[in-house]
Image 1 (cartoon, rainbow, N blue to C red):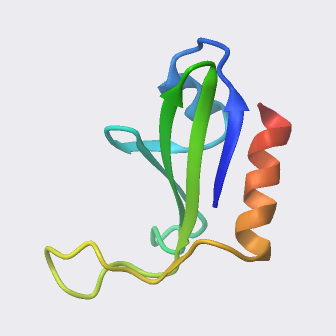
Image 2 (cartoon, one colour; image 1 turned 120 degrees about the vertical axis):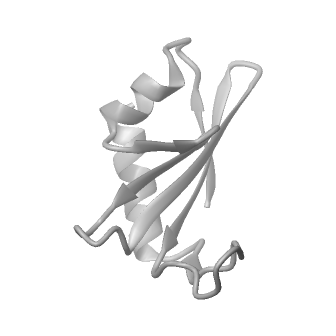
Length: 91
């Protein structure tokens, strides 16, 4: 699910910490829902003009085959929509 929020100029890593996400790699952040690490929300973030572009999905389980990025991801649905709304409310 892709959505936009006005960029306040604050450091992106600090913004993501504020909403409970952990830095994973460049412009990728995660928020695990269980101690095992999965399922977890996976968020890609980028900047364009005066907007932050959020691309959110839910990873249901870790990749099955080593070295492949394929996973059981949900890009739509009630859980993803609720998380997007939570982020918008905080920011």
